[in-house]
Length: 81
Image 1 (cartoon, one colour):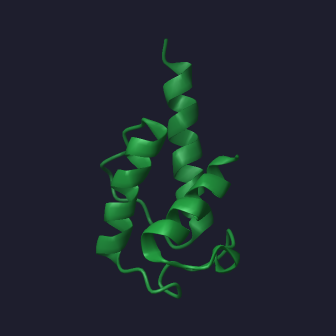
Image 2: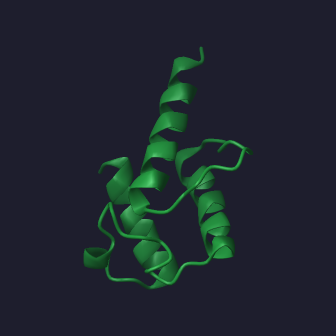
């Protein structure tokens, strides 16, 4: 299962959304997710992928934005010896 697919599955479970509505370009706001919901979800992603997401503010508007950040952090963690 890819990182994107895992994120889509987790979002469907946490927010009780239909997976078919969770396309990579789906706008989080359109899905009814506010900034607090997204922050809580990001903490769950840290646990799921065993990563520490950056503290700097990053604009996250779509599911693909989330996947890109997680993929980058997973890759960076693997690069650290």
